[in-house]
Length: 232
Image (tube, rainbow, N blue to C red; front, side):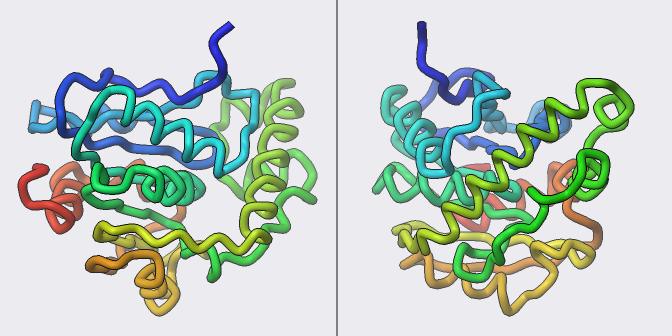
């Protein structure tokens, strides 16, 4: 049986690529909107192949990097939301010169991210905190999803306790949301500078933690262009 891994869609088919990595819950349907009405290059989505299996942040980063290398992608931009931003950080440190840059959204750098208390919440309260879709909150499946979410937060806390500090040889764009407890403070976002030898740009936008689902394609592509003007 194939080991669990990321599935990148559409599949890699060129030397350059932009890949979106979701956070908790893994929602990626909105990525389709970023690719309409056909701007180039396409923004690909990375989805974990076994959603109910919860590997560590480090494992996920290694898995994503291995896919990029195996596909012989020579230049990749990673876009990560929430915990997905930390996965991008771990993937990026393994990619060396293949990495063109990273956009981190709604996520403070590891040393500025407090340990999460969310794993201790009851099922429904946890679902409300992470803005889970109503079709999950209102069904018997909530208990299973809540166990998954708690496992992810425990893994996040273990990653933060390890005090990771990889440094990328590529620029970073850090995007925060003014009504998001994970990213509203521009000073904290500015500390992403410790994780790159390249440029850091910081942007604050209106909205909450799930603002990623509402960001206009032109806005996102503008942030990507700050990393590497030839990428969009």
